[in-house]
Structure formats: structure tokens, C-alpha cells
Length: 364
Ligand SMILES: C[S@@+](CC[C@H](N)C(=O)[O-])C[C@H]1O[C@@H](n2cnc3c(N)ncnc32)[C@H](O)[C@@H]1O
Ligand code: SF4
Image (tube, rainbow, N blue to C red):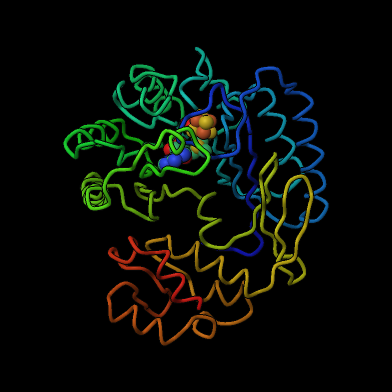
């Protein structure tokens, strides 16, 4: 739920053990970094953001990457302690970390929990060795399985990422991986269709994604199967068991405020009625209410429940119906791509496959 006083904190760790050939997230392979120096920079950036947001309540912290499971647990604790020692925090604050099985050591998960992490998201990506090799992952399926069992034992809140619609992937094989991932009892799953991003090794090698028709069928079957396993789709690629949606990611999709720490991290703040885009370490750019409104539409339509009209008006200062193209909306409704109720405007299941087109129509 969007609450204007809430603040989410994203901490980006832009280092990995190796670069995966499909990945265009900002990350570098550099074993020679000085972690202590970087943590000192992060703390001083956090202090600067605290100076302008000290009245806010932090409801989530997310360590993402890159590979934040490479951060020493004592450094994770330093960051969490700094944030929780400065800002007011929510009693059920969510503190997540993305872990890669390739950074595991015997006590890693216990150490992360001890540092203050209360939600662990594991980068599994595939549950067979051939596809893990194809994806350039440096862990094997046994280590993924071991980590999955461990995170369910150590944490009360957990998630896993998988990438599907891999070239040549067959539904039966994906179904096996889906059944297996559901068997661990995780509270949340992020399932992404493989995209071939420019400037990645996959793009240079001319790797082609799965044919669109097959990818759509896989998406539909994935949704149906997960629903039968008690995971409700609440966003294009995200599925949760009851009350286990990612609070942190909901902040982005619901238009809440967040700050981003670490190279390439950005944030959004509403300060004194101005919309601010922030870039690490401390660059501020003003956004017009119209620019922010477009962002809210782009993000909100990714949610199954859609855009909350009341929140939209509260954030932007004008109503959703005044902002969007009403003629195009009527057309999209006729095509059964978009629906509306008193509180929300949302894409239908079919519309979710055509979000880019819908957004262009609504914002033109
Ligand atoms: C930025 S990554 C960080 C997670 C962690 N470093 C890892 O690899 O396990 C977040 C997630 O994005 C997904 N992802 C990254 N590149 C992708 C692509 N080209 N297509 C689909 N999913 C992708 C992966 O599932 C990954 O776990
Ligand atoms: S997918 Fe994860 S581990 Fe691989 S390069 Fe990207 S951020 Fe690093």
C-alpha cells in the first residue's frame, strides 16, 4: 500500500564473480576492490539522504546487484545498523538480499541473518546443469538445491529467481523445473522470460529468444500452474503466496519514494511537493508532474491490481482520468486489454502481454 511518508532504501553492489552472457545490469568483475572504502562511501551517501528525508519511515531495505552476497556480512550489518539507527523504521521492515549460489560458503546464510537480513532472494536461474551452463552460470544444480533448502531453513521470508523461455526450451522441461521450485515452500518467485539485451555476449553471439508464440504459451501455463500451487501473480513476472509480495518492489510499482545507493543506483523522492529523480551519489533532477505521471502508469500497469487512482491523484496532483487519453482508453477497453473499477485501472491478462502498446496509447 502506498503511504506518502514511507521510504525504501536500495543498496546496489555492482560486483560479480563473473559476468553472465545475458546480463546487462550494471556490474563489474573486480576481485581487488576495497570493500571497506566502498562501505564508507555508502554510509556517507546515506547520511546525505538522511539529511533530506529524516522525517520518513523506512519500510524496506534491498541489497541488489550485481552480487550483494559478496559483501562481507559485517559490512551488511554496518549498513543496516546505520539505516535503522538513523531513520524511523517500520516494525515489520523488510530487509532483502539477492544471493548468488556461487558466493556461498558454509555459514553464509546464518551470517546474513545475523547481520539483519530477513528476506533472502536466491538467483537460481535454471534447475538443470545444461541450461545453467548455457546461461553462463558458475553454480551447478546441486549447489542451487542445497542453497534452496538452506534458505527455507534459515529465513522466514524467501524468494528465487528463474529465467525461462530459453532458446529451444520445451514446456515439459520447464514444467519439471516449476514443479521442483514449488516443492521448496518458498514464499515468493520471480520468473523472468529471457530477453536478449543489446551489448551482451548473447546479443553478440546472435542468440535468438524462444519464438514469441511459444513464449506466450509458456507464460500462460506458468501462471496457471503457479496459481494451482498457491502463488498468485501480482506483477508481470512476480508471484507470491499470501501476504508475501515484495514490499520493496511494490514501492517502485506503486509510485512510492525510494533512494538508491551505489554506482548506477537511482531514486525517486517527493520533497516539498516537487518530484525529484536522484542518481548516486547525490545528483538531483526535477521531474514534471506529467513525467512522474507517465512513470506511474508504466510501473502501475505491471501490477495485476493496476494503478490505484487515489494514490495517483495524491502523488501527481491531478486525476488519472484527466491525464490519460480517454478516447484511446475506450478503444483499449473495447479490445478487452484494459479494465477499470472504482479504485483501479488495470491491464487484463491478455493486456499484460501488450503493455508497451497500451502505455503508448494511454499516454498519447
Ligand atoms: C540483476 S540480477 C541480480 C541477481 C544475482 N546477481 C544473480 O544473478 O543471481 C536480477 C535478476 O534479473 C534476471 N535477469 C537478468 N538478466 C536477464 C535477462 N536478460 N533476461 C531475463 N532475466 C534476466 C535474473 O533472473 C536475475 O536473478
Ligand atoms: S546475472 Fe547476476 S551474477 Fe550474472 S552478471 Fe548479472 S548481476 Fe552478475
